[in-house]
Image (cartoon, rainbow over all chains, first blue to last red; front, side, top):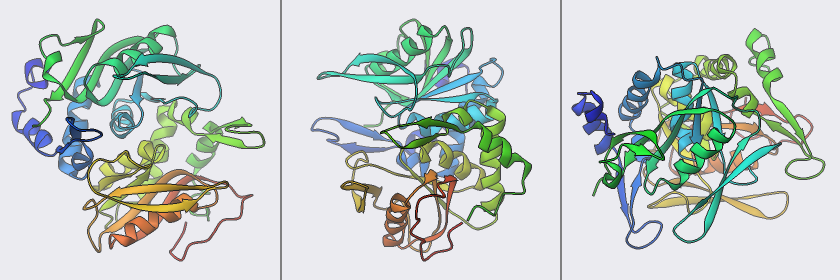
Length: 186
Length: 174
């Protein structure tokens, strides 16, 4: 699941990326060590390395669409899409996308939330990459996978910059491959 | 204001890929939907290329994108011109210390936030959003950057709404 285990020997690159991520304790609530990727975005070298690693992995996989989860998935997805010649599909919180959408509910720690995608954004049989900044429970990514599969797309992989070690031994999310660059920082 | 690029043949294609959704988010508004542009890789690339060509030799070290559609266009521009990307976000989304700028909506007020330390004094900044209507959000963005001591070189948008009165800003606004 982690970049080093997928044949990438770019340990130095990954260290640069991981070191550029800032931990903000007790955000958004006590006990949570928030993995802040905005500091990565401030570091042009680290940001470019991040995008390049994903692009190198996906450019020859006939992926025609990159779906990014609002809002931090928007910060990484489009650059990857542009580099591999794919379209970019924003997966958004309710009532943000105009026109016809399909919705998928998912469970939060307390309550539920919802992810939406435009009808017609993706066609049956298209190969799609899902991108977000971090995967924790996998709830949001699972909803993204369901949205895409409901319209007949094939989710090739889910990609995140950061992933919790609990998912490390599995390397899969709902049966889909999960690719993560780095572990969370302490 | 949009005269900078009108002669470029890529512009017509970009315009044609933007979808108008009537009566969204409420009756009477003709919403300019850029998601259809994002579905065409060539047109999306042309859009980014046009901005990159304009800004790449202007010593811009910061691209600030306005949540959320500014997050789609800003980062590719930042990466291409060698600048950092700074997200300007709705309240309580950014962790850690932020500065806030309030601005007026049609009904009520909203707020834009930026991380403290994201931008340093005298940095040259570009602000990116998909669309400018009244200019309220862009003004708030400029204020945030200027409060941090940066120089806003320009604000860049795909779409301007010509029928609404725009508050022209004191800076070079194209």
